[in-house]
Structures are given as structure tokens and as C-alpha cells.
Figure (cartoon, one colour):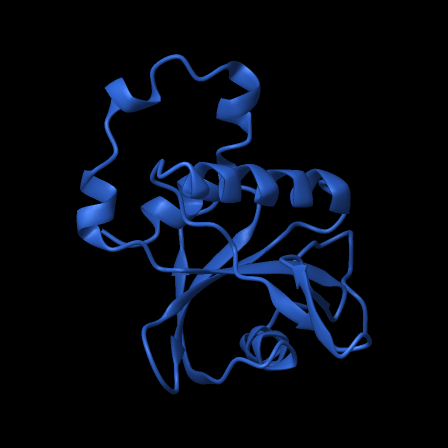
Length: 153
């Protein structure tokens, strides 16, 4: 069953969220905590082993796949430059059978991304001075970083 675009998240049940994560090889333990997000649905998800992760389900039809992937690449560039940012994880493409760096898998009509939870010390390392001079386009591309960074305090 695909996503109903008249009620964007009607098909995004807790079961579907867990199934989506399992579809990329993760093992959620069933714990879900809804996090603040205006456009998308974002959850902290408990894992069978290890720390919880943050799963972001994009509003169907809101952005193109390429626009979201561009944002993911930008956040990865920030992290690579040691600017505090939490990039999405890359997963194996099941049809290819190997890692292709896919940061935007789809399940049940929903594109989603998964990231690690930012530790509190990481959040405190961000300062307005460090962000000074970033252009408007860079600021617009910070949606993923902002949601990942504000998810846990």
C-alpha cells in the first residue's frame, strides 16, 4: 500500500516505521519517540543493540529525491570539514546487493533517512560565531542537520 498524498502520513504507522528500518538491515526494538518536526515525521528509534537512531520520514511529494540527496551530500561535507553536523547513514541497495551509499531508502511509499543521535557535548559545540558567514542557500540546506542536532538534548 502506497502513501496517501491527501493525508500525507496516514499510512505511516508505528509498524510501518519499524518495517522500514528493518528493510535496510536495522534491528529496532520497538521503542519510538516522536520528535519535533514541522514538515516531516522524525522519531528516535531504540535499537536491539547499540544506541538509538533518528529516523526521518519525508513528506511525500514535498521535495524531489535529488533535492533531498543534495541536502544529504551537503551535511556530509559539513561533517567531513569537522563542522558539527550529523549526516544520514548510507545503506545497501537490496537490488544491487552492495553498498551504494544510498542515504535515502524508500519503504511503503515513504522516503526516509536515518542518522545517529548527536551527543549533548556535540550540540554544545555549535556556536553562532562558527556559523557566521554561511549563505542563505547553506542555511536552507541545514534542515537535516538542524533536525538531527535538536533531536536529543
